[in-house]
Image (cartoon, rainbow, N blue to C red; front, side, top):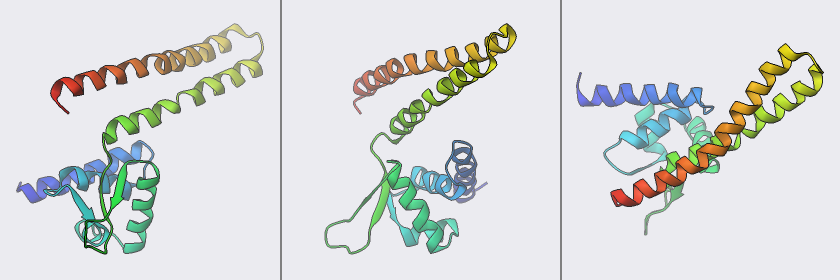
Length: 156
C-alpha cells in the first residue's frame, strides 16, 4: 500500500472513529485529514478536493468543528481565504468536553431511582450506573492535570 493509500485509509477510519464519538463522518474525515496532512492547515476548497466532499457539506462541517473548539479558523497575512487547523491541544479539549457529559448519565440514574421506588434489584443497577459515572467524573480531572504535567516534561 502506498503512503497516499495508507493516508486515505486512515482518513476514512478517522471518519468512522469520530462518528462513533458523535461527530458527523465528514467532520471525522476532516479531523483525520488535518491530523495526517503534510501541511499543518488547509483551506476549505483543498479539504473538499482531498475528501471528495461538496462545498456546502464542508462548510457545515468546518463550522461545527470550529464551534466545538476542535479546529481554528485563521487567515495568513495578505490572504483572503480562511484556513483551518487543529485547535491547540485538541484532544484534551475534546476529552474535557466529553467529561462534561458524565453528569448526564448520573442525573438520568437519579431520575430512574426516583421512578423505580424501593425495588432493590432495579435500584442496584441504577445506583451502579450513577456511582460509576460519578467516579469517572471525579477522577478524570486529575488525569488531565497529570497529562498537563507530562506534556510540560516533554517540552510541549
